[in-house]
View 1 (cartoon, rainbow, N blue to C red):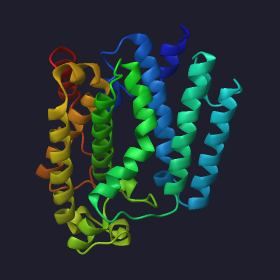
View 2: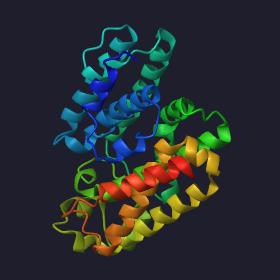
View 3: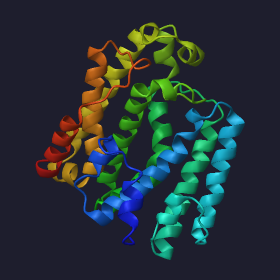
View 4: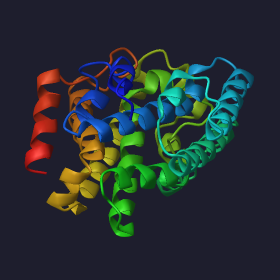
Length: 278
């Protein structure tokens, strides 16, 4: 990374955010790379829920696909891709991974539903597998079994984000909830999108929070202490989300009205604990 890289990355990371604490105890060079890759991932993945019309989302995703192709040829235009100072081989590999992620996200602009929870997880694993594998290697995680556990954890974090960020996520054409869970509460994707308050969705949200919490706890328990420490970029986000899900339950799942978030001091404690104890 160039000497100006910390300023470019730091300006984009909100102090006190989950990403800030997930990367707080990484060494500077790895922190910068991880932050850049994660910010690029978020730029792409948040497009479907941030656009009022599917055609606008497709146009933005098409722009990013072109940008990643240009970046392979050192013709970047966006500040984040310009900030990458990887060697030619590493840059080309990262761009191929981001192109695949963007193509998968492009497909999510066409509304799809999932029959059961396994289908949701399968979709998220397919969407994120290559990028999680690439990022895991930044943290010296090379075992296929360990990467698979980290991928499961990352997918559970994404499912928890869909709940906690439902105010935005419900605008996406593809919701990360399954038909059977929605139907059991008398809901459809459209009724979730049109709900005026969280109280209309409380029973559904309580069930989803309980399920995702269980999955997060189960996956974290399968990680060795050493893997939890090496993979603190992922485990810190998982531990933070676990506690925020508890907070949401205490506040009657009012995720449409309120942004659920831990105090910075609590996030700092979790990051420090994972760095030192795993």
